[in-house]
Image (cartoon, rainbow, N blue to C red; front, side, top):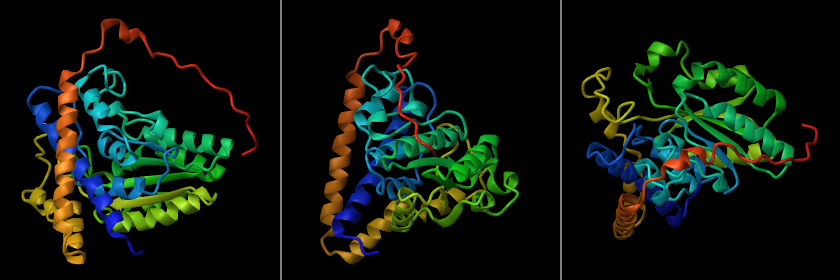
Length: 329
């Protein structure tokens, strides 16, 4: 697939915004501005960018512990995201959700999730809704390889396959299930094998190459939208940080973190841009400045926003349901 310069720069901007957002909130957390826990997405930016660049505004995504990258790639407002992490009233959940519960239903973000793999059946439910309503949406479930060992992963894949739902299962294979290395909890070589066992077309790719991710999902999303789904795609990528900010990572071999940084997906795309276009550095520098300004404003917005009032704990507990006409599936 031939990419335009504008497309490549857009991929670069999205990945850079994810990286810098994570670095900034990590620093703010260490300085005591952010309560709770943070699970960073640094190193995996190419997956969220390549997948979500193929989605429409009303397509659905269901995320994981480390969901900031998925939300930014889907188009979430970084001011409201950061304010949510600060626990402020201007955040996506009015400060009541925090890092692992950022959601924006208006653009199909069904929420990050604090329970391993819990986004998988949620995406299947969204896929069922999309099929019943018949409006052509697809649903994407992001998860790590550790989540493929839980029960509802298998229930969800079976249901999606039996009902032929428009769901794409995106496994971000980053070599660790929380603190456990891949080879100690996965008795098979690939998660793609588990998709194939349910009759689901399954692929594997280099998740550190945003162009490879985009190309594969260009086809997979199109085929899912046409009714061929579900699909499963295993993206091999790297988690640079620990399971959470503050994790001492004693389970990692010495030197591994340095090796991972040699496969940086952002540097890989930057080098490609510099090789293809003589004036790429000028535009790359502009993107860095734009992203820095946007995140500096988000930090100031979050610090100056009010905390939620005490009575708000009783608000938004229940939602009014809607009724839809149900056709045969």
